[in-house]
Image 1 (cartoon, helix red, strand yellow):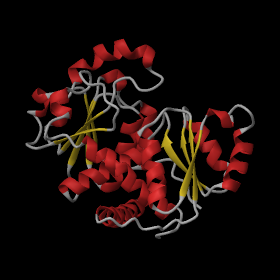
Image 2 (cartoon, helix red, strand yellow; image 1 turned 60 degrees about the horizontal axis):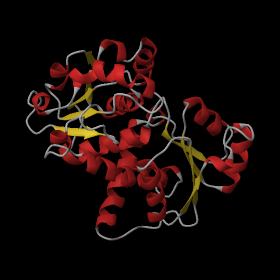
Image 3 (cartoon, one colour; image 1 turned 45 degrees about the vertical axis):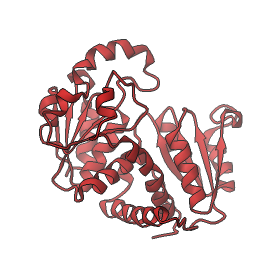
Image 4 (cartoon, one colour; image 1 turned 120 degrees about the vertical axis):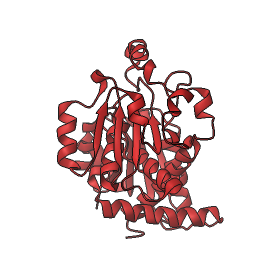
Length: 305
């Protein structure tokens, strides 16, 4: 039994295997075939945060694979009516896999420790591995080999950025981050990345123009994530010079793709002109959440080794 709490839980070979399964299943799905690899399997979705893409993409993925899903809301009392240990021991007797969208990363670690089925991180304050895997799969669909190519991350060095950094390291992609000094990865995160993915070529700069210069893909996210609403105005002031607009795109490689994990705050981190423009691949990214998660579920539950 395996859990997926961070991309660091996966080796390069395992990511490549999941991508291979994803490609096979996506090709079949496009041709109208939804291969029932997981008949009778049950997935629980345990969410403390609101979601569109994570919830629907996971539910659709499991249905495509022949299984079923249960969305567990606040009424189940997760973290309130009983200990996480008791909750995990019982829930994992009923289902084959649990997808958790938690406020705090330690919650999902605790749940995984006491569950007898696989647990998948659907987002925590520490990371968003399924999102980052879909992002990297999308870039590979677009440009082919990732090794030696460069991604630019512009804006807040947040949970998604942390997962993207690990994924880039695993797959040999360079990462240049254009981030205001006070919002860059702290020393603890940098030390963890060095230990976890020593092969990662990471450059940190406060200059967004420098960051995008060699990029084949430019990625941004909201400036204030869920739970940071009180900081929104201060962050808006700090990050406005890092907005992705046509002027910044002009400094990148010709045809560089624009990426965003969504939802976006249009007019803040990105302009309408860019997110709706020909270089934007945000819809393809979102669609690939389902396809990559089909690959993750099939691999994790042993349908395709």
